[in-house]
Length: 347
Image (cartoon, rainbow, N blue to C red):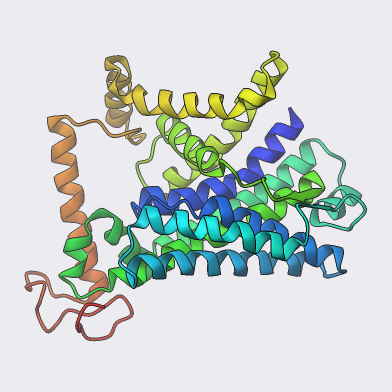
């Protein structure tokens, strides 16, 4: 149980990265399967060579952002479909990861890592869970803060209504690249932490990771809702923990470990089909009436009205961020980009 919760809190960082691309940016990024291993391999090799594990983990974030940058450039500058761009980067990273690691497996059992340093001072149990929870919440709060900055609001607007935000002369290409870099940077950090937790790096450790992230995001938000950013990211973190607990319960019940990917797929399918159940819609409406926040969206007349209100709010917020006076036309000379400069040609 302790192991499941600890792993869930580490994988919450993965879920936050998937939330940024799939939910906020509305971008189907499959780079994560490769960037996760890239971060793990980079940190593992650096630790084996005597580099401080804090610095090694920070550099794992950097290499993750580079992976996201490559996918972003392939999509925005190369005009390659987003899904295909992520797949191409992921495939290329497999060979790069082997080059970084020098072998298919890098053991870390005798090395000083962040987790061994933690367990030197804290026994595994409630305290270790609390400390890992603090780390996960810190990442969550950083994401919350970023999404409330001008650049973060522009990122949200890009995912909500790309054509609308383009009309305000915001470079949606730049916003996509920012989102992909941050998301894959989180994957790199998560990979580094998982490698240090389990005591080794394996070239196959990132395979199917996107399914883990999606399961955490979808299950978490289906149960806990996704009304505002703070609630949505908290639901993602809790969803990651619930996912690992579900896996642990399945293993304890005697399920074959080889069937874990199938179980993950079934969890995602169930979470996607759940909103179509009439009973769930009644629960969602009851929660909405209490102001708890919505779960997965359902296509009803009320939902359409709420969506229209949400789009209007997005436009109003975009006008504030971009410096457009109320009632001004989108292509008005008053329009500015997300950095405050006068509107120019869309990149």
